[in-house]
Amino acid sequence: MTSRVVPELYCFDINVSKSFFVDVLGFEVKFERPDEEFAYLMLDGVDVMLEGIAGKSRKWLSGDLELPLGRGVNFQWDVIDIEPLYQRVNESAADSIYLTLESKSYQCGDSIATQKQFIV
Image (cartoon, rainbow, N blue to C red; front, side, top):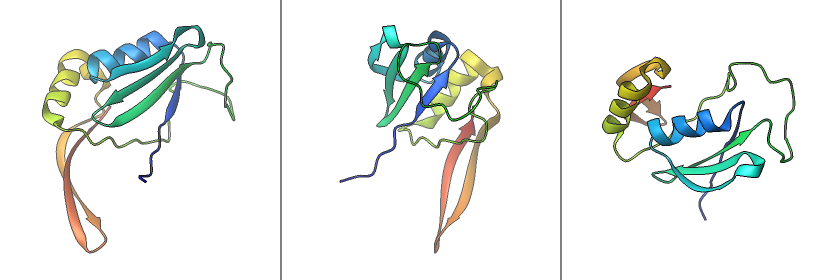
């Protein structure tokens, strides 16, 4: 059995967030519940849930929501080919790029892992 975590991200406007994940990042909609403002998305084995704050579902909020949402959290997604993803983001939503595409090496126990990464 593999360990899986599927983050559920609250958003003020489910349509804007879903559009960014689908149209810019390339996720596909696995299923959605429009009446609850909920969408389950996937890309290269990475699953993400989006939920609109104004939706009719139960909320798991532990504090006040202030813009921008997501401060203090970082998700790393392994994708099959990062270059076309970065190109798509750069062409569609360049202002969302916080860190441009780079190769970065990290110490991982007794070895060093090098990966390509960017931050939105």
